[in-house]
Image 1 (spheres, one colour):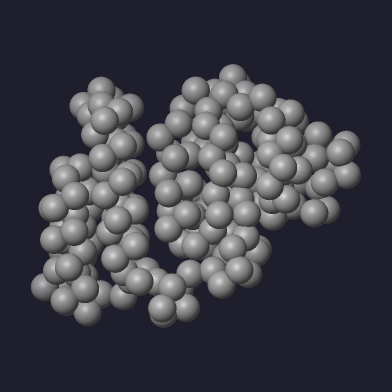
Image 2: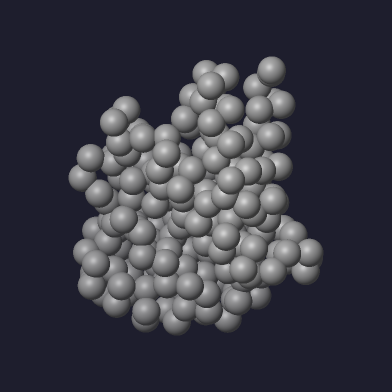
Length: 212
């Protein structure tokens, strides 16, 4: 069986939102010799599809929660820690969707992926007031802040958080990652963020690059 077929089976299993199907697909991928990182990529693609179907009203919140829980169990079964895949000393990441924006699924997938990769993640949810990000950075002594914005009208909220981090003397102590449909690498540079992530897999790559 070729790699693309295995990845498709992993993704399709995630879309069923059924733990048994997902675990069976993971076991099959492991038996085929697929590396853990690629298995996670396949699961992530499926979780993204789950989010898309949720946004279109084809799936509902219980389905999304079932899929996320099953994905966490599947990733845990890969035993990344024993292979050096997990973070030895956990770095702390604050993640949330900026104020005025109620989109939540994509950000939640990112949080799940980061947590599965060994980071300590505190997900603040959606429509998060700017000050709440600052308070969380202080409370958890965070190493990174993830800022999601899915609308052009809320994109400036990412810039506002960065400015408030500066005003509180925290900007040099914490990395900032931005994401969401209207965000780009150019936007990240413009507002002084440390990186831009197009999707959940890229968010993990960028977090590891900046924090490890």
